Length: 311
Ligand SMILES: [Zn+2]
Image 1 (tube, rainbow, N blue to C red):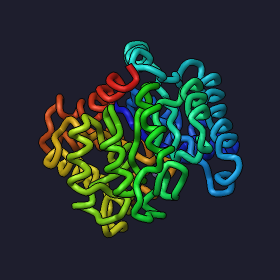
Image 2 (cartoon, helix red, strand yellow):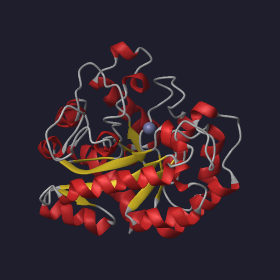
Image 3 (tube, rainbow, N blue to C red):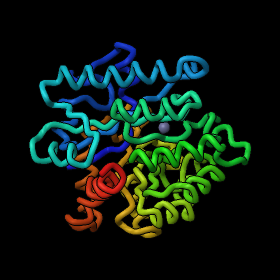
Image 4 (cartoon, protein in one colour):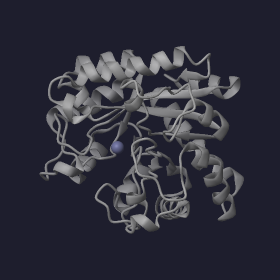
């Protein structure tokens, strides 16, 4: 059983290129998630460049709608998760939980009422920035060295009040530390790896990893080959174990989970998608992790954050 805190699969769904309910060519679909033992998959709403300037909220609404359409057509297989109780019900009753997140605060178009409206539609986590700069702050790809904007701080406060999970993946370093200061709840990095093992600017320093642990948050290991290994061509499933080992060493076993980036990343050569999850869990056991530790990494750490933040 596992929870994966990031995928970009809705991008293909909203474009009408694919369905979640049918076995397909992407990195995941509901039949494969079920077979792999997924307890819950987070589905990110990410707004492409072509929509970001003037239709970010509209595009996000289309993605949210595509998620609920798929859930409605899944015969109860995809079950929206809006609370810890929803997750517990999935665990007890079967099916695959689906949580909506927004990747990039552009979707809020600078308004807290849009944030609240997305909450009412079931969005429970927001990655404050993608790699671009937006109204909240700077992403790692457009880093001016400045931190969160006043609006960014207000978004964090409002998310704390509503019970939404604040996600720092993609955020620049100054913004990261501002979130650590401003956020009154566990902070997560939904899909980021360790800079000590791979120098990509999307990865986290050991100090950042410790700060997330101090905030009782979780780092979701990203399966993108270029974040797992400086030599992307050499990346393999074993690198996922290496990054988990590193976070466990630096911050403890309670602060690492999975954030695959399925359907949004280039996978290592020995991987193809969600069907690899059982092998990843096995390789943790083979590398000396006990059953309890594997349970923490695979779902219990995320479960703790969901319980604390969403209630
Ligand atoms: Zn991303």
